[in-house]
Image 1: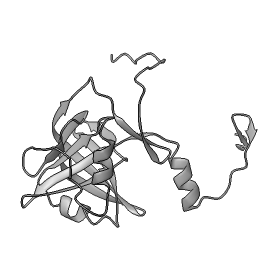
Image 2: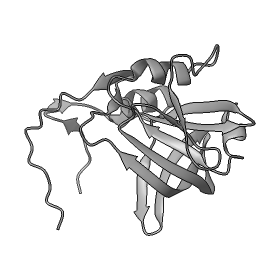
Image 3: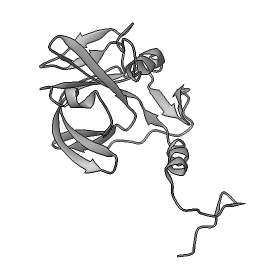
Image 4: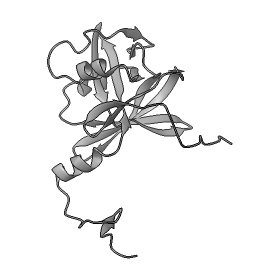
Length: 182
């Protein structure tokens, strides 16, 4: 195999990796925005993750990545159940509030209660009721595998997407055919 020296015809030399370069590179990959919430002792706790990945159908598993510096995760990981809300394109204010380090993260956020401690953001495109299955150390993050117990989906809604360090909505006009599920 030859050495990669250009992308899309433009001469581009590959350089050594540093944190800033990785952040700029990763920003080019769009991802969904997920609220991870629970009520513990009657108090809501939550954070926003843009590293949600479906992992397995059997057993039903998804993953999120949590930065070790998170002050919220140590509380959430103790919950018997966590509510994952895949945020809707109209929920940028909720995403910003839940990702804030100050103030009331749940101001103007409608919360619904699930089993155990699970809490869900109203109006999301989908809800997944989960529990912590396993945590795997990965650099400055933990990859958290979550077992899915129950789901609810609003197929007519459009997801909120994080891309190029900003929130975006899909236009809903796909020019690519859908894959057939055989």
